[in-house]
Image 1 (cartoon, helix red, strand yellow):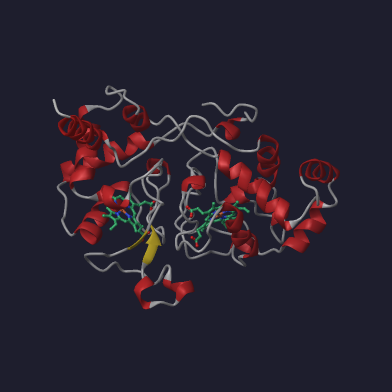
Image 2: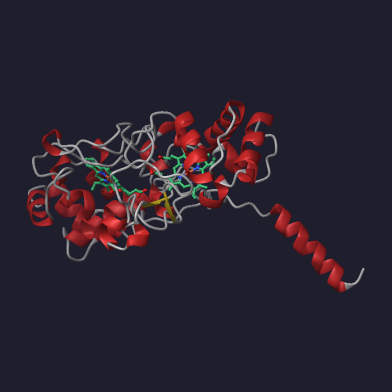
Length: 312
Ligand code: HEC
Ligand code: HEC
């Protein structure tokens, strides 16, 4: 065989085996002691003005990393306008928040702390409170040169968030070569997910969360939230939201930025109509859902209490 032909075969094989979805790595990089401190902060109500709300009030770690409410409730029972997204696998999001307004986890932490309908606090109040706690003073000073500061609070929480990944879903096992990991129905669902182009928006390591897209590409979607436009004020950004990750999606109902979509069936139906412009048959929806359910992974190791290990 001549060289060109050999190269062609290698290329053809490579492109056939290329999947647009990538498994979550089984080895993780994060700072274990900082993550352990970040976990305490994540559960600490002193981060809110009236000491009633912690990060975990809206991001339950033993479930899907969200709160299963349409919109979240912050201090004094105040309600926001958006559905709480999962904090799981957020280290792989290209940007944070539904409208992508925070570039990374470090930048994201101050969002809920300052938000008047979430924690309604500020860093000087929080630092003053934490400085009354001998354990925090000791732990922060061991890990950070300047002790308790805005930077160290955000960084420790960010390190904890980096540990919140859900590897080993059945779909990841399938991608790693275990062809028996999926049933025929689930595999059919994955094929439909590709054929109908769901994968053009929901792809990569998080099966989403790597691009901003308009809700209502084909048929307008009824919402009062302008998404990315709210902070850019550019006409072309109206109704643009971060395409959500579909990992663990069976655990994170209700759906969409406003939490108005109650079931996975309704979410897939709406996607077909508003994003693809092609209504799906019930049996196709059922297959796609059975595929989506294979994206549920292990509970993160640091939620289960292990810090020293980063091998899943
Ligand atoms: C009152 C409920 C509430 C509290 C408390 C809260 N969050 Fe959130 N969180 C939300 C909501 C709602 C969003 C989506 C906001 C948006 O997109 O505008 C969000 C978004 C996020 C995101 C972005 C995820 C993504 O996919 O874009 C992360 C990460 C996060 N929160 C972590 C935290 C941390 C850390 C804390 C504590 C410092 C915290 N949250 C406190 C409700 C809450
Ligand atoms: C053009 C891009 C695009 C395509 C194609 C697309 N989606 Fe989406 N998907 C989005 C966006 C953007 C959202 C967020 C919508 C919102 O919150 O208003 C979303 C939300 C979802 C949700 C809800 C997730 C959550 O946590 O709220 C599911 C489930 C979903 N899509 C599945 C699918 C399926 C199945 C298909 C194929 C039938 C599909 N999507 C096609 C962009 C797309």
